[in-house]
Length: 402
Image (cartoon, rainbow, N blue to C red; front, side, top):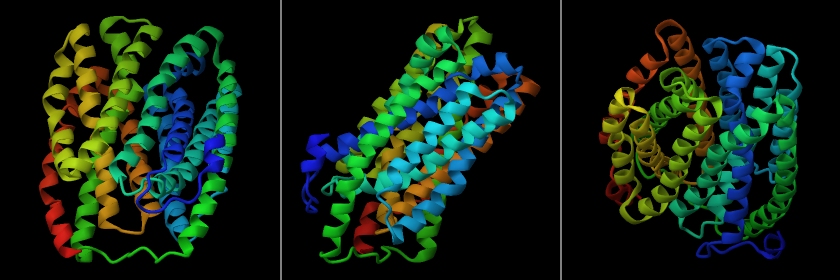
């Protein structure tokens, strides 16, 4: 982390890769710990005799907690950035892990999931702002580097759960507090760079916050982007929360084998995130959104009818295609709302993810009533909502209006 301490506040033209890598690393650590929750669902289901509805409520507790707080944190920090909040958010995740490891009752599990959600709510808006400040104008690249850290962390979480938590038992979740401690240390260094960059920014001309389009047009575009994120998150929630159960029930896989399959999907999402940002910088975020959301439809429709081999292939294709949209969506929203990075992060990392949590609970109840296979037959049609992209303004209109 010496390189971070040596970095000074970057000019607009300079991309500060040390900060981008460091904040991406912290995003990875953050999401490794968050992904442990869904990765240990089979263990929690057995230990506490949970049904699918209760599994969905655990996801709901995490994502709605993050949803309710992230927009509030984002709007507040747009007005008054809080560099020191970064290590504090990781501290909340630390406490949540302790509860997941040793909670004696289901309500305590819900509380642990909620604390992890609070950590997410505090981390994402300010971390997203750090990534944009360090981007040097390469906003898609910065968002990809930031988000791929989270996706990579989410993808390896199930592997760590399979090879550490499953053999050693639920108390071993507490060992991941070491990752939280590392995150607190790194974020403490990043927060110092961030504070210096904020001080330097005050001496420069304030960022232009003039809206590029009429408010009604922007509101419509934001609603469409949020809905596209929502539908994407419903599908990814169906995979992250229930895919292991689907594989165990449909193909009689073991828990470890199902978690390896989940890793394939989540790793493909990480790869899609890497590609989505830089491609969006070249061809524009709108084109990436069209391809990503609607392009996943043929694969999602085929998945419920595939054998084990093709289930793995299709899940990789879905993860790769569908994940490429999110960096483009965030950058597009930031262009619509200049100077409001925290609010945009709150909406898209918070609200839309929280709505995905509500959907996860609904999907759990659907699985209890109609079977887990039915869930994927219904969710297969969600990428068709990508047709709503037609209501988004073109980049040419944004430039003309600006």
